[in-house]
Length: 169
Image (cartoon, rainbow, N blue to C red; front, side, top):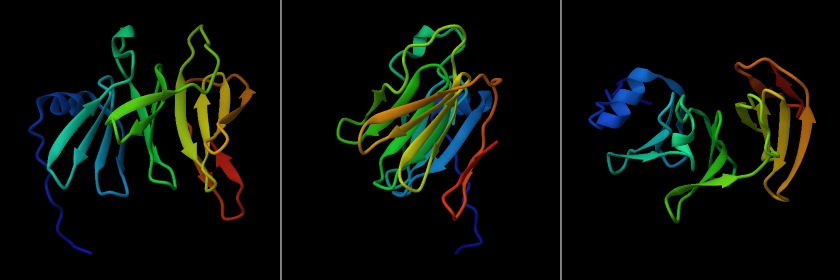
């Protein structure tokens, strides 16, 4: 390891403004890239080998007066990047097209519906928390199981124990 911290200078104006507005998540992927989930301006990826920045948004970033809130970035055991937006849903990064692709995991819900968090267990089951419950998505079969319960908007924190049990707070 190194005891030197390299300063990251942000010259990309859109990312710089987004960082000043707020960041929900920062995720270093297995390829050494740095994903930055922003408060209202989608997600950015800093490609460390090329020293370039790419910007991605959901399919409908302009549909919300409040912006394109990117809550969480995760990577599954196969190396695929997954992204959760508060109001615009669940996506994966398609490295061939270099675009985000939407995955429908819930029925269309109205009345203040919003996503809250994303957790991936050791078997690549996805736990997608929202304010009306939780969706468990299996990437291998493409199936979902939904558990409905009301919960206040806010953060959810999940952890998987060595026994396989998942604790969510």
